[in-house]
Length: 587
Image 1: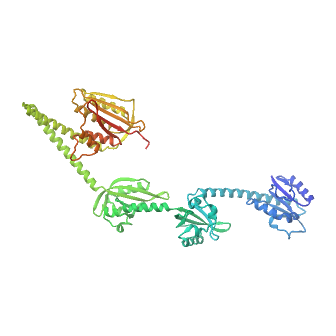
Image 2: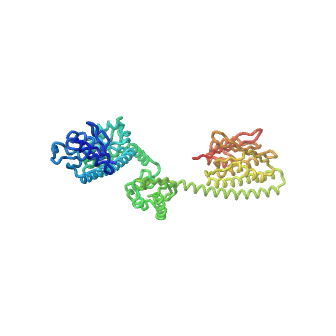
Image 3: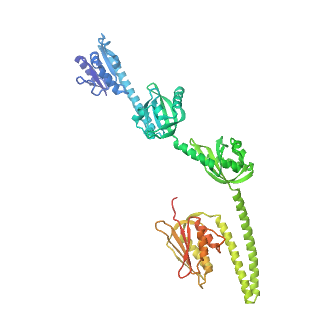
């Protein structure tokens, strides 16, 4: 329903219009109240010449208040045109002569109502657009400032700008942004703005700004031009890169001073190209930076038989994967074995660059090979020679009748057997070390039950006991059963009692930490102080040697998952070896 205000001086004409409007669909006649005719709610105004002369300013003000919605006004003027020249027609939108032709009036009113409806739709769209603009403006991570470059006045800014610079919106509005906000770079900033306005499109450069607290910020400013009220304004998107500059300086220092060889790589059509190398690279590879920067990675550093491997690495890095692997690379001094760590770098949501970090492991690989060969030769020769000694000693024991000779032969046999056993244990440790650090969730109670059953079967004269809860699940090394079995067998072997006794207990170590303890108690002679000290100190010395490898094996297995081994005395004699294992965590 269109509320139609009738500001008509002649009562007869007002009544006639009221009657006619009431008979039309969609119109509701409204009469003004006293000397303030436009204080009421209305959607359309019909006014005559005398009323327009008297109320022209009030009508214009009311129409302005309604913007951006169109508030139409129709002037009913006399045929004589009385007063038309004396009043401002800019306050009305249509005119109709009196006496009024009803068809013409209906047409004029319908046109005005349609224009108002259109303006309301446009105003709603404008409001929605403005709301979206404000949401985007306030949600932006960058500081946004819109200002008039001619007047140097602020039109709009977001909360990020206020937070970044520490000024209120009123303080920013009163500032000459080019002179008070931008410091040290004022002339370049003015030239920057002139270029943006002249070219009419975006531009990005770096400037130093000052905050309200007096701090200097290194910023990256992107500028673009937009029209506001038919005047060019500049939108500044300001990003604080102070921390980025510091981080860049830190990374540059790390790059330049790293002991590892580092290659900065850029991918061109998926092909890795060398963009920079550090001094450690020059030392490791023997190439000068000037000679190799700009070259294709595959041509400069990769042996021909490793080209396919490099292609696979490049595909994985471009997919965002980090790579750690051993590779062979060409150096000025020949091929070398290196540990490669490839780190992808994303720019604009895609991988475009990478760092290849190389650690020279050539000597380490050679030492590993030498140790493997020596270990293999020693174990082979030791085992074979001790088997030979053991066999001949057994023959002597059977043939000799003298007490001393037989005892000497028996001692030879026992020593040879011990060396053979040590060789076998060293071989076992070598195999276990290849799986060192592998852990899993395991029920310790189940493992202990299996070990005690196995040990009892192989040592029927021993008394194997357990004190166990129903179930305890921890982060256990995969070789935990080997460690517990070694301690049990070692206790049985060295006891001097007629009946070896071994008890395995499982219990919480500390309720607050969640760790558990596995205690192996025996009635043997105890573990010598030298054995315990070597284990506690973590290594052999020329003045103190452990006599066996069993405790070392146990310690390595437990320590591989962050556990601990502790040895105390049992009462009245014997030892207590305690294995402490950590609880399962989410990390």
